[in-house]
Every structure is written in C-alpha cells, then in structure tokens.
Length: 260
Image 1 (cartoon, rainbow, N blue to C red):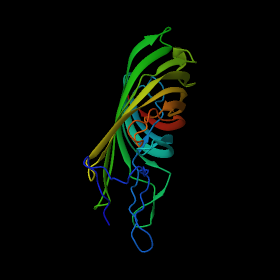
Image 2: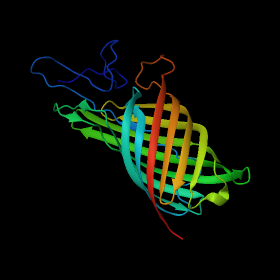
Image 3: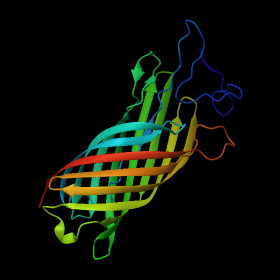
Image 4: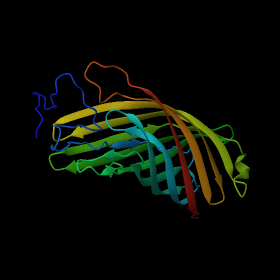
C-alpha cells in the first residue's frame, strides 16, 4: 500500500498531519507503516573544566533529549570514552539510546536507533583568581534508520554550549579533597532531519539555558544539570510558530585514569 504524494514529495493526507512517531495505513489484515523516531540526547555539559586535568575518562550519561521531528521529551542513556590534556582540552566519543519505546513495522517494540556523537571542549578563559573558568563545547551527533520502503531517515545535529563555572573550592585544594563548582550558560542545538524516501529535509534549532553542579574526588567525577529548552516544532505544518518549553535534566558519572 503506498500513500499519495504532493508535488514537493511529502505524503499528502489532506489537512491531517500524522506524527512522525507512527503512521498507520489500512485496517484489518493490512500492514502497518511505522516510522521509528531518531532522538537527540542533551548530555550534561559537566562544567567548564575537563573532568580530569589530564588522562583517560570513561563515563555513563543519564538524562533527557528530544524525540523525532515532533521534539517530544524522551529519556536517554549513553556511555563513552574521553581524553583530557593540560586541564584545558577535552575530547570524547559516545553513543546514546532512548529508553522510550515504539512499535516498528513488524509489531516489535523498539527503543529507536543509536545516536552517535563526538564532542570537544576548550577552556579558553579564567577569572576570579583562577576559580572561574569559561569554555566552549561543540558536539556533532548523527543517527539513521533505513528499512526497505518503510523508512530512510537521517539525523545530523550540532550541539554548542558556552558554560561558565565557578569553583566552590580553592584551586590549592584540588586533591585529595577534590573540587566542586557551579556552572551555567547558553546552549544551541542545530538539528536536521532528512527523509530520503519522501525527499524532504527539515531543520530547526533548539535553544536552551543550562544550570548545573560538577565535582571531582580522586578518580571519579559527577555532574548534574538542568536544561530549560525551547524547541523548534519541526513536525508542525507550515505557518505554525514556536514550539514547546521543556525541562531536560541530565547527569554524568565518570571514572578517570590520570596520566602525567
């Protein structure tokens, strides 16, 4: 069963807008056409400083993200590995998956596709006798799902954040007592969803402000964060304005292997 398309390549179902989460065609013995949404995780930024001054990092993320073109909230879980140099530069790679489930075209329950990401953080400024830090974090995220003539969707996103952190412990008290700091800053996520079957590409920006706390003790680090985000309603018909406000919490737990 094939759905009609308009001249722009979109599925033409009159004025009825079908969410990207699911699209059911036919009744009785007819098969279901189901799109499994791709998700964008908002991992905890973790402050302006690397988790460890220098060394390897192994981390687990728990938190929220946005789900598909409708930009609904979805819980995410992920893990990754990173490396820090000179307490200034931090690079990491990770994978995330939504804990939310949807029924696929075979009637099986799925958590959606894995989202892969790479991130880099550079601490470029200090203030308040080095108790304050400012950094720029940039990440690239990608995910895709192709299933015959049912779905061929691809997600590309840039995640930019500018955290400003103030340490609650003096610089001289780094170890063994560790450190604790508060951080805040703006965040922008530029998203592009590409439906190659329909020949349609939708882009939008998620704008957020973040507030969090980050700490390190010996070989472990933890951060907790809240993002107040305004979504771009990618799944809405033309002419519909702003999206929704969402509270998107996140937490990261890191184990570190110091080097040098």
